[in-house]
Image 1 (tube, helix red, strand yellow):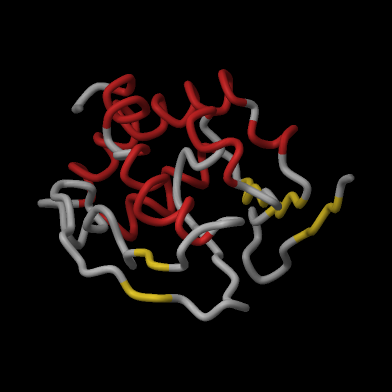
Image 2: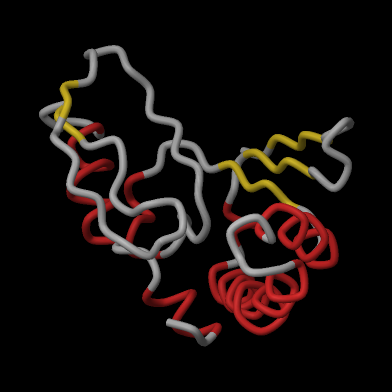
Length: 149
């Protein structure tokens, strides 16, 4: 999982995301879902009890690689938040140095694993062309929304 391919293809348990979150909250689902499948660092699976969502609840799912083909039929609306890979590197290094050993370690991980893995996803899945809502978040103080049919 330390390679870009491993990060893209193996980090997230898409079957668990589908079975424990998306299908139960989708049309015809029993409304019983978990609030998480993996811890935020994607290092350990979570074993949380299922909770029942209200009949009128709306699921807003946020995460990387969510437009993968394995999950494609679960979405009624796709939103893609877009920033440049240079900005991914800058923000990720600043944020993740707190749990990594240093800013240099965080930058190295982004350059060798995260960004190359995200490039695989963007090149293969093309999420920006599949989304009905695009958010250009290069400047978080002034996001630009584009709506598509």
